[in-house]
Length: 167
Image 1: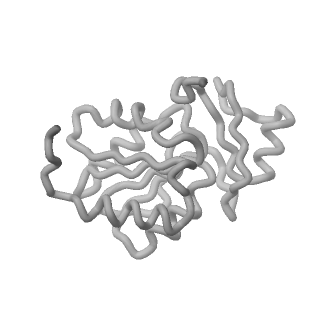
Image 2: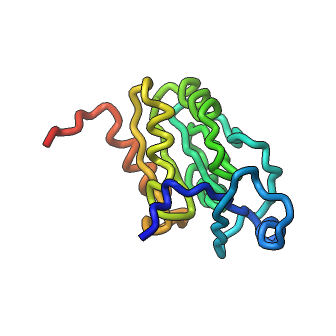
């Protein structure tokens, strides 16, 4: 099995952008692997080279990668959570993530990406190494539909402030 966490990747977010990537048109610098999914967001957003703040919030941060943005926005509607959008995950926008986490009242981050669970979690954890935080990571195997994301975020927020038993 390949070590997916070590591969650089670009994730097209809409069918049009996916076609552009497949035909060799603009590709993020350094991208080596292209992951194409049947999922797409309803709107295309320009790649900015960093994470884009879609919705501000103070109760934590949700980082939505690629086509995970639409279900994340629906799942977190009405919650005071900052939502970051990552058009591509490489290069990893350490400053964008750290800024959003430090602006929130709670250093809770939920990572939602349309690939293997926790593919990018180690990078996010290294970015926040000096910030006490919690970081669940969701991927395809976890069910990236709106209900699954909402349930995970709700359960995760419910455990805030409780001690995690040591094993």
